[in-house]
Length: 314
Image (tube, rainbow, N blue to C red; front, side, top):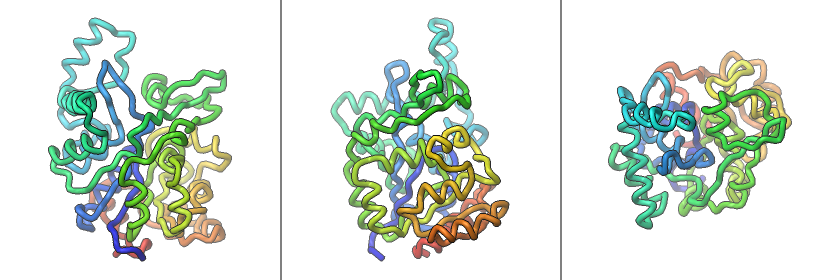
């Protein structure tokens, strides 16, 4: 086992809640989180990085617990004013305090700072001790291809259109053409453990894996441990059930295991899916059934501890 810290691949609310548990059971300074940027886009001239912000706000303890995104108790005065002026395209909710993050990020990027630098600045301002890395600093938009041939970016599909089930394909070619952000490959190569958070395996983890060199490093190690985001054949949150079939596997913890089997050595699934332990082990993966629905920070911490133990890092 190498001597570096722990690296987690992450994207979305489930990942953020798992990471919230992880920093309770290990030193946050030893944690590097590689975060999906396939959802990033500009709104009203501001660069918004949804998954980076969800992870930052959750680890800072300021996230809106009801939605899993945004800042608790935020107001929306600016958006309400914008809707009076241009109601046709104001469909992505950005709170007033949340907007400060995007204003800062946009200005710093315009001044020549890198996304890695800005991400570190934002994390430090919010008191986050873990190292947060965007998966890439290059454009890497995830495109959802609909059955009628329409192509939309992921946020348009999810938020504007309500995540309908008419998905024909998910296009990750932009991520496949992007470069991993500085530090990503080094972190994966030197980590003493790699964890895959309970995130959408197609549009959160799949984007990271699509980056050149990432999957090859993970395959060479083949010791990552993943937590399934699917419980009882359904995602806890988000449209994974509409997207996983595009990869040719079933919507289940077993389907996720099939997607990860080439680079993972173990998987944690929920107790309701205990009957899948055997089929997952038949894929040459170690498997444990635990409570994975993180209704509290204590459950998240217990789940994180089990995952670290399976990865040999606890």
